[in-house]
Amino acid sequence: RKIKAMLIHEKILDTIPVVSIEGEVDLYNAKELKDILDQKIKNQQYEIVINLEKVPFMDSSGIGTLVTAMYKLKKYHGNLKVCNVHGSVAKVFKLTGMESHLQVHENEKVAIESLIAERGENPPAPPTPN
Image (cartoon, rainbow, N blue to C red):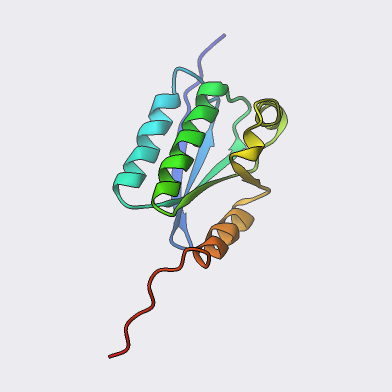
């Protein structure tokens, strides 16, 4: 089985980083994904959307990477949302019970709306009147 490279594309939508992965995520390249997510946390980007539309396969190490990042982000009152999960990846999410940990949305727009809505639940302190 030929190992295809995993590509990671990044963009910002409504101030929120969206990381789109292309290709299979497995034991061999999950660390690359972890490093990118850790870097975002270092850069104080505490809300992240992961788009899995172009991911045909993800093993437990890939899912573990996402869950670990989500718990790190929650420490900073942030979160990680996953969108466009399909096919075998959706099956793995179900089988591993990941749906109870990771919030899966149908697309980027819905994932971003849900992150923005959650900001209201942990509101920053209101500005002091001068």
